[in-house]
Image (tube, rainbow, N blue to C red; front, side, top):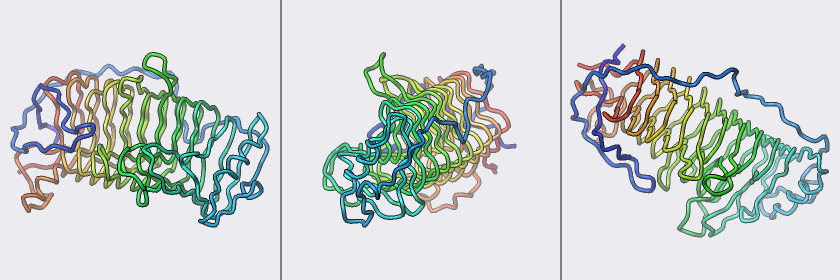
Length: 391
């Protein structure tokens, strides 16, 4: 094991990945220091709340969007037909089927789902956003709902043909103030903002959060702001999914957990997933975030940090491969506290410095390059991690 050295940051607690600013550089010349960490007191759970295949209450009625007039020819605006099919379901909900085809969707009007409803797309079905100039748009909306399933096919944004230059809120799938939502076996790409956004509706102190959301076997690729963003949520399980190649407007992360002041993001589990090739960090955890577990995942080849904790609490990073990221593999800044970083392979990070200096990223150094722990972060436990070998 090579876990005896970490980089100790200063005690300012400043976030080196600006919320809207560029990643800033930092010296690789800081001396390593051995840190003694106390045990992290993490809350115990009486039972696992997560499941890759949650049970939902979906109505029995089945309607095809073709029956409602959708053409799926890549030319016709099919938004009204989708909405007509959804609105024709009884109050108990049902399943909307989407045969193979390319369906043009007006993301300013959106596909507005209802409770107890499944949107079931053929694997060869695509929902393609019609170009617009708005700062905000949503291909699929699930707002203030319960028991919703979105599966199959692909959601394709309009970033390449977007008519405006401002804003960062063109979302593929937007889930707000909803509970028991299951998104699985689909692709979302090329959005002006985030591939998937999960969050709340309402003011700080009274916001209704999204809860019990499962994202399974989803690929979110080449979106402009984030592969997936979290506002205020409770109990979200992300498993067997990929968040890749985010680029265009900061933070450009694979996954960004950032509820700001609207509320808190609690109990998020990311498991057996891949976060790679993003222009920012692989994952960012900001203020009002707690109870995050990242396990058995690969966080590789992102241009920023592998994992960046600006202020997370009571969270764990266990058994991951975190490698070949542009800055440190894991950076923990003040006021982060009560974090456990254990049994990870965190190797050959800080690649930006090596590439800029025309060196192989596998060059052995005597300075830490994989872990950066702020001296004022507290109750950080490091055990059993394998770091880059040193000369």
